Length: 267
Image 1 (spheres, one colour):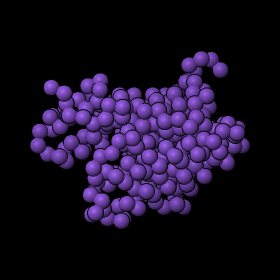
Image 2 (tube, rainbow, N blue to C red; image 1 turned 180 degrees about the vertical axis):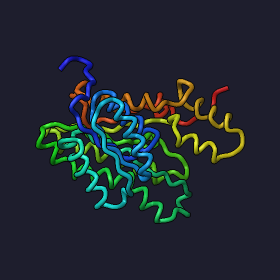
Image 3 (cartoon, rainbow, N blue to C red; image 1 turned 60 degrees about the horizontal axis):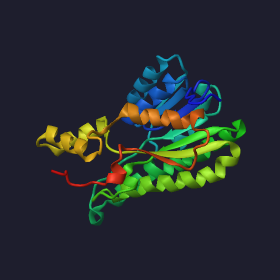
């Protein structure tokens, strides 16, 4: 292995929540490094659009639109992804997530269950489905999208924080279990990212949108939020042989936010 080799040529990746934003960015970055990619989204047209972008790199692609709460559809997607890409999946990224925002005393149980299922349970379900193929190959990289919010609390986001912290524990336990089979398991915890989700949130706040965006930038130690490309590059590194000795690790790609904490701007 050459030092710093981040090629993913010959690898086969499955990425959830890849219809736009971070998921699409990760899929594109993987394809750019030579990996074949299978992507899914609740919106099938968005998943197809991501696959079309990835196919421009000359790799095999597969896209499907379905609800991850449907276990049968989720497991069918995993099996069909291996068939379409020509062999067992050896890179798995669980990026799909929902973020309910409620005070705990008015949190609808349906929203709590949705977050637990999409954010955490699906990660375990797909890992269970994909791990046997990785074991047969004697290699694999499993990556869960956690969040800086696994480290610091935000009012009315408690369930989201809990699910993202849960992914840290799931990854560490699985890393110990799967290490003898050559499978690495890690998480990535971004801070705020310049993405469609951020833009939709800012628009939903109304008022001075430029001021709201500026407040997010200032919150981060280096003075701006992260980019999709920066997070995607982190996933490429952890998926590649350059990270061969990294497992059971959370890589915070947050510009230092989790260490700084959320503080008032210093005048």
